[in-house]
Image (cartoon, rainbow, N blue to C red):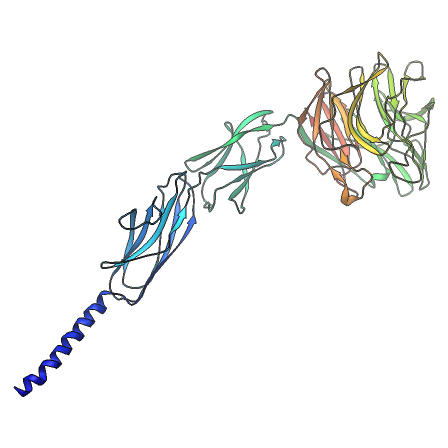
Amino acid sequence: MYYIRRIIPVLTCLLLLAGCQKEADILPVKTQVSVTLEKAKMLHIADVALEARMETTSDQEVRYGFIISEFETPSLERGKVIEVGTARESTSYSHVYSRTDTGKTYHIRAFSQLKNNTVYSQTQVFKPVAPAIMGVSPAKISNLSPLTISTNLKDLNPDQHVAIYLDQHPLQVGARYKSHAGSVFQAELPQDLLAGSYTLSIQIDDVLITYKEQITVLPGKWVRVLDLPFNNWHSTTTFAYGDWVYALQFKSGKTEFFKQNYKTGDKVNLTPFGPQWFLKSPAIVVKHPYVHFLGGEEFNGGLSGETTAKHLVYNILNDSWSQEGDIPAAARVSAVSGVFEDKLYFGLGHDLPPSWSIGALKLKNDLWSYDLRTKQWKQLADFPQFGRSGCASFMVGPQLHIVGGNERTRTNKENWAYDVRSNSWTRKADYPGNGYTGFTGFSVDGAGYVGLGEIGVFATIDTRELYRTFFRYDRLADSWSSVSEFNGNVPINKYTTADRNLGLLIGTDGLYSSKSLPVYTFIP
């Protein structure tokens, strides 16, 4: 009996220890779950990439997965349970959920379950976003300019097929890169795409995304056709006739005069007016077979020139020069000019003061005609405002238009038309672009074209604002409309003309560091 009494307490203690051990096997010492969510491929409206890590110190099997619910606190009883797997040790796991609907809010938790004990992670919220084109640049497209398309599509696979369309016209997909908002694509327009409004769409695998706004393709096309030999924009004067571009350059103490065919590249040396003679910023009027040089800054071998009122004529057919009656007015540079029937028109512009600023310029407002038959000059109605310089000019029918320019201490966007038949000036619709001065202009098929203006022609290189925009002027409707932007480096020294059904622009390639003298054609 004595031994029995001694054994009973020991057995009782062993049974209690056994019970404690059993309880310890049921509950893990530590079970922890966390989850990280990322927006994923969005190939089918919205995919949700789910990631979690389950931590456990138990050697028993743990069930784990995710719960997705429209309720704020998802649980096994309140939500869609996605069981990913089971494990006996800590593990990371993931899942892609592809059944979300845009416009709804989803609450997501990760869970792990050891027998009847369930541990949940923190709740994260996901709002599916429909795939969309967020923006397009530029809003109005020039035919040869690349189109940049910004989307909210993230983490696209490099091997996913991407197609971009304007209506049914496929675009050539170029560079693809990522921004903080999503994927960005660049695309090239087809060469034969006509001007008009189009619907932009992107197809990625079997998902088609359509842009909410119409895309406007502007009329006209700029094409770089030739690069002329170039010395310095301060000592280069150019004009064009037919397929030939003519360049007068003062280089290494002597004058070079040549023509080059922009279609074939053929070059022919010509005879200058003098071996050390050069003319900068004259008005140039081509009336086959003659080219009239009116005014400008004349150099004769020296580093400095003088404004002149000379009227020099170059004969295209026999490569010869002559001098006709001088302009019976003040000498000037940067005058406007035009030709209608048998008369040349010349006027406005400015002199060259010692101090180069708008306030120091003596702006001119007189206008003259020159009769090609009688060789006589005649003064016409003065421009009704203050004098102007830095204007664009073009001739449409019997009207000489001047656009923008410098006016004493201000610049402007005004468009004035001189009617050669009534000898009168009329203000027309103002130029709609951003520039105010330094324009260029020409006319093709009865319409005027103006562009490449700037703000602050007397500013430093760093503060000059140069523009690529071009606009078409309809004389009958007295209205402007956008055409394709110039797609080269914006020239600061330029000459434009028109021949047959296209325009020609010759200008330095960018600012003062230009290394070439490119020639561009504009096809309306």
